[in-house]
Amino acid sequence: MADGAGASGLADREATMRAEDALAALRAQGDPARAAEMAAYHKADREYLGLSNAVTGALATEWRKAAADQAALVELARGLWDSDVFEARVAAGKLFVQARMRPDDALAWGWIESVVPAFDSWAIADAVAQGGQKRVAQVPERMDVLVEWTRSEHLWTRRAAFVFALPFCKARHPSAVERAARARVFEWAERLADDHEWFIQKAIGWWLRDLSKRDAEAVRGWLDAHGERLKPFARKEASRYLR
Image 1: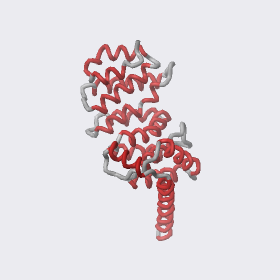
Image 2: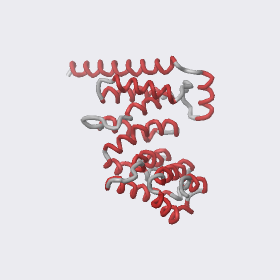
Image 3: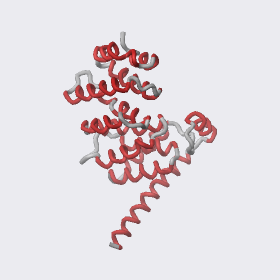
Image 4: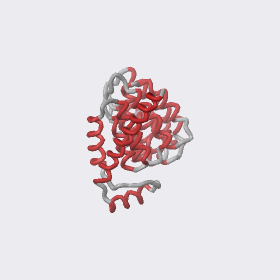
């Protein structure tokens, strides 16, 4: 038992060092002036380093390729997230953007699902969604999780359901699975059309807009039936590509 505890402690220390090294790499490229602007814009009370998405994305790609395995990647993500540094949370979300993870992506999905209730910023939420979308596309049965999110009292969790489901908008000739997923999101949009939280309205409009690029008739039909219940800006967003 002592040996096992010691091995676990060593693994934890190594994971912490990896997170510390990653944080050091982020801090090394910090821009204090831009950090102050970002803090004023995002308003959430946390540390900002002033890094661009290009920088966090490049570092996340480097760390993802260097990771020994999925478990190590999750430990790195956990350490970055727990720092509560804005760019560290963004980078953590970008660690899981591979189209497929083998032999499965259960550990990655578990981490992603665990942090959704902590979302408090659209930028962090969307960074995590980059990986979340891939994980839902890899295992479409996770739509069962997303439907539960639509019933959450947490604004950002409700919003995440629509953002994580965006991959199902992409196919011009959708499979049966993709058609079923679209039908489910239409149901969510109908149920939440009267939710006047700005970010929910925006998410519904975003999802409908993206689908309209591939299936304009379906979106037009939904808007004819339910569009008047949306806020004008969301309705405009949804119909942006409709003639």
